[in-house]
Image (tube, rainbow, N blue to C red):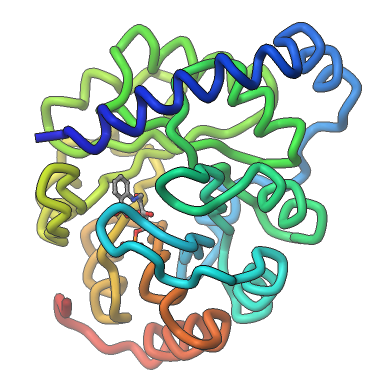
Length: 269
Ligand SMILES: O=C(O)c1ccccc1NCC(=O)[C@H](O)[C@H](O)COP(=O)(O)O
């Protein structure tokens, strides 16, 4: 069912061990102690925004292959910010998504909105990297972690001044929600079949803590869906492919936002 996730995580653990041999955990920890705290808050941005779009930079994906192979992270996310994104998400996985930690660093250096490290995080080392690269937030995927790991990594990130978007795939994962998890995502993509089902966000909404900021992730491709999910209590919408596949992703987002503001209703797909 979740073969791709298991494969990605196994590769990730191998990658992290290699990285630790090149820059030790202690050295990374020291560098983090010397760098300044994140300035922007993902939670605040979503609470303030009237669209809640977290626009994602994603060159490829396991479900679609190459989406925008030669895209430049700074150029694309600059366009997203100009178009009115509430926040940015940058995929840093190279093997499956064509991303790099450098993309995150460059984006965070030029952005005036929160930037999230979108990664398959299983180790504190990756959280230190995120903080050093200038991220405001990280993603934790419940399906990739035990409850203990999820709680531990959430607390570690928070202690470093990073926010956490905890991603759930189904109701069995609600036990991963720690008291500190105040931003919770529902991923509409089934990691076994890659099929996206937007009803998943609607169904899961009632299971999430009332005061958490809710984010619907994956498969969103029209403004009507955002309008409908807002009514179901979602404030954030993580969207990648729909913008990245366009010749000008920023212009695609601007048009999408116009669509939301024009106030169309209904649950479109
Ligand atoms: O996108 C995939 O194919 C994928 C496959 C396996 C694990 C994760 C995957 N995507 C990560 C994401 O959650 C999405 O990049 C993100 O939610 C945006 O989704 P979309 O708007 O559908 O690009």
